[in-house]
Length: 201
Length: 221
Image 1 (cartoon, one colour):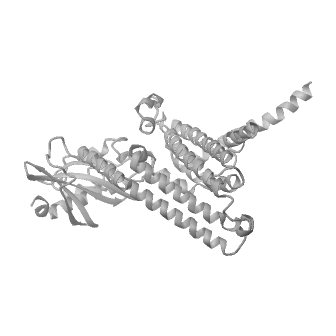
Image 2: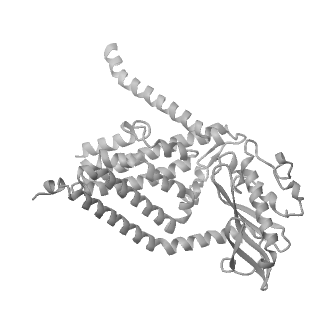
Image 3: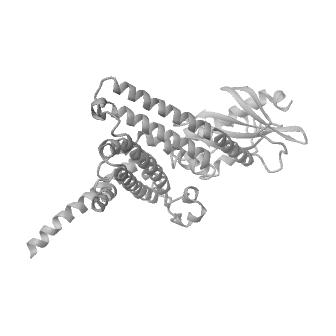
């Protein structure tokens, strides 16, 4: 029988689909095993770079990637990297996410033992280009305005964007985005305050 | 043979250009052309996938029966894109950070399924590879042109952050127009529609003139 006549048989098609699906799954499984370790290593490198951006140089002398504890955050489990100097905990770095205009905005924030912000960076967002993306450090220095702030300074009522009577600038045409970032950072500080004992041991 | 190869290349780049003639792949075209660099990255990634998918489809075209060819193509393309996505994440991580979002978007690019269906399923492996390359480069060209126009009028730059994509030696491509921040509208979705519409009109006018020209010359003579 020639290939042409076999191809028209009813039984041929499900078998063909099955074979294709099997081959595709095999290819994916193989690609996954081959790339898993490299991807994990690349992501660890990324994390290391982000950590270096939020923490002032020489603030900690431990490997923050290794010193991680899982805690109950406001939205499920939260990985908290603990910064130590001479073996003593001096601060913490963790991620906070808040819904922005389009999707979750993920912020990485570093807090010292007194609850003062050392630095904040936006790791991931899908805000409108040209409007909301000014939260990125490459586009605007706005995100640095969090440096040195804490739950005491400014006061609780002023933890918001200027439109809401707070101290943080909003961008022309984009209020939702900075509002979400402020909310995320505030949430992070609240979390740090309520878990201080646990984090600083 | 070289004659038909030339036609395939010309088709891909101009006559049958994915964006400007077939009006396919509008979703990635509109979404990623906020800058020339983004357009270039998306275009090159799509070209890579298109070439490989065309080759694979052409290779299996004799074994796949007509009735189930579409699901087979879909599985094939989805697998391919996922593998490319994982491989880039692992070995070209810096590039992946710039292009990551677009790679997954290639799955929804109907031009790839379109070429599998319209060309690779009926043609030999070499011709299909050339077709994939030409169509991909035509697509890249369109995205870069739209991206550059939107970027120039929208943010006053050209090829911003090109060095992230191509390496530091390409930093000379980056141009910033002084004292001009651009009109935001061009970066937002309406800008994409406006630029695409104007370019389509321009291409149409050019082709109409070109077709009309020989007649006019003949009449003059």
